[in-house]
Image (cartoon, rainbow, N blue to C red; front, side):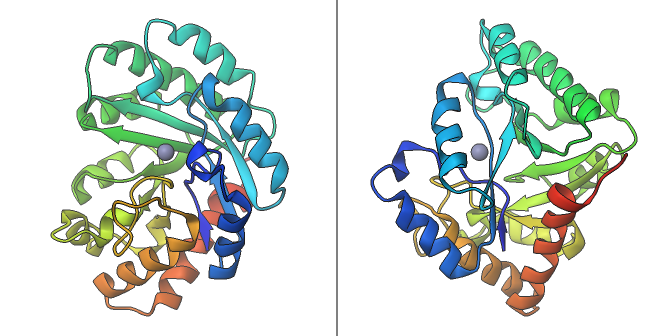
Length: 256
Ligand SMILES: [Zn+2]
């Protein structure tokens, strides 16, 4: 399995990071993608990447909730960290907490989509309470070879399909799928397994039965099992497809 979204560098893992990595490997996780947030998390991310080479892989970008008045400086900093990144992320739009900097968020997303285009890298996109703006931005910035993950997907299957008119986007599915009455279960039934990747977003969004506790990559197993149950297939089938999808996106596919 590949955890396509984990903040393993978060201080929540400081007491026992080696054990967390060992448990992930034991559970069958072979690769993790570590998305960036902003300047303040860069050093911890770099240390983590150095500690687990070949297991942890770097994504670089500026997270939408870190966009404020100083976003220009933050963007320049993020741009300086692109070397060795396998993706641009996490980037996107978030109007859940505030719409104060929405126009800056859109400008930052547009610019980071250009980085993905220049470097031919996938995007890891966060979108919360901002689907109309996201679709408009993807439409405006669309280019051949545009691709990535719509991480922690919370929209409908229709909005997901619309995003896929502008690029090739996979749906990132995590612990939320295990929550009771999750609307997400209905959504993933409509999406082909070739369009889904697994993610934990650890240390946040733990799957049941760990909900409310610290999340970790080993719990990818629980997410795969629930996805299999919802779709009425074997967990092995889910793991095979989602692993292949993530491998193609981050490590194999090259659009020269
Ligand atoms: Zn994240």
